[in-house]
Each structure stands twice: as C-alpha cells, then as structure tokens.
Image 1 (cartoon, helix red, strand yellow):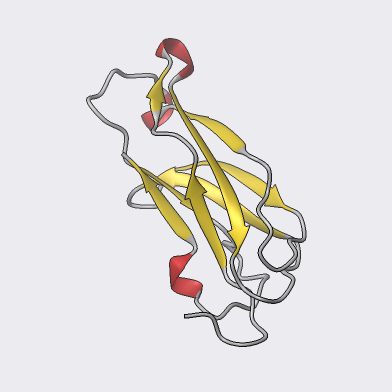
Image 2 (tube, rainbow, N blue to C red):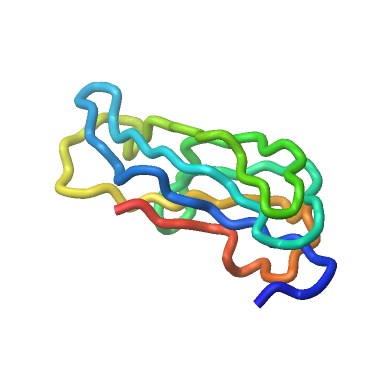
Length: 113
C-alpha cells in the first residue's frame, strides 16, 4: 500500500544472475520509485545474502513519482575469488542510508538466486 504523498523505492531484477567465468556472476537490476512523490538522490549496495560482504555501491539520481532508473549491472565474485558455485545468493538494496523518506522502508531489496 502506498501512503498518499510518499515515495517508495523498490529494486526490480532485470535478469537472473549469470555466471561469466573469471569475471564472476553478473547481476542486473533497476530501482523504481513506485510512490506518488519524487525521491531524492540515494545510494544502494550489492551484498551477500547475509549482508556481510559488500560487492559494490551504486548511485541513484532523483526519481520522479513512478519513474525507474536505468539498468545497473555488477559482477559479483564471492569471497573475492571467482568460484564455480551452483548458485549465487546476493541482495541488492536501494536507499541503504535512508536518504529517502518512504511509505515502506521494508521493501527496498531484491534477491538474486
């Protein structure tokens, strides 16, 4: 549910995580403001499912109500090394420092498997 006059940032998974050998796993996603008010600039991160290892931070410019960012792609190398594992479990989180006041702070992430 969107509260009137509020922003709501969500992560949209563009593709499944794909293994690219020595480059690691590639994840692609977008950030959407599904609220009805403009969202300020913010930052997100890509991390392990436990959230302990951060693979990278990304910048999200201001998004108008209903607007979606361009596509972000990141290569993930678990443990700093490329290893062939049956699946990758990674999280992408939007607005990690809560720079955007939202109607729902609990839906700012998506999982890659």
